[in-house]
Image 1 (tube, one colour):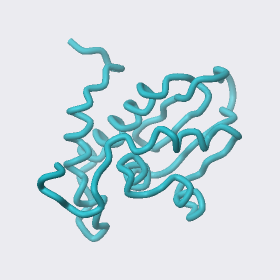
Image 2: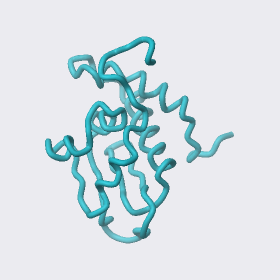
Image 3: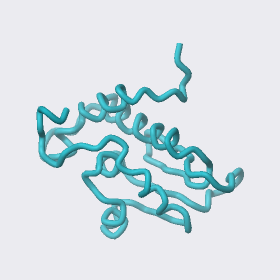
Image 4: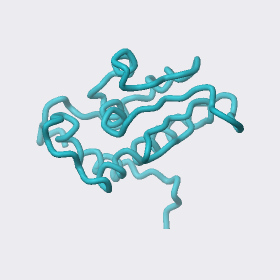
Amino acid sequence: MAGRNVIDPAQVRAAVLVVGEWLRDSTVPVPGRRELGEAVKGTARALAGSAPGHSVEVRVPPFVAVQCIEGPRHTRGNPPNVVETDARNWLLLATGLLGFEDAVRAGVVSASGTRAGEVAGWLPIVPLPAESDPAAG
């Protein structure tokens, strides 16, 4: 049995593809909580696996919070470097459909602390083309 922290890239990609149409078109009905949660948790945990560390906390309430990026470990109180957003905007970032700096400027992502912006260097996690392309899936 695989451990909780083991990330299967194929499962993460499959979870993202389930919500891909909604990410590309906000008029499509919102996916179910389970499908949305799988995509959010999978991509956030994949980020933590690719960029291990404890310097930045990425929060996507109510689904997940992960620590990533090498550097000083945070142990008490509020972390000094936090990236926080909602599920849709996180998945837009994770798929490359939204740029990190654009999201911060638009106010859909909160990035506090001197190291929070380093998350941008690890995105996208599961790149999706802007338009639905059966060959790209």
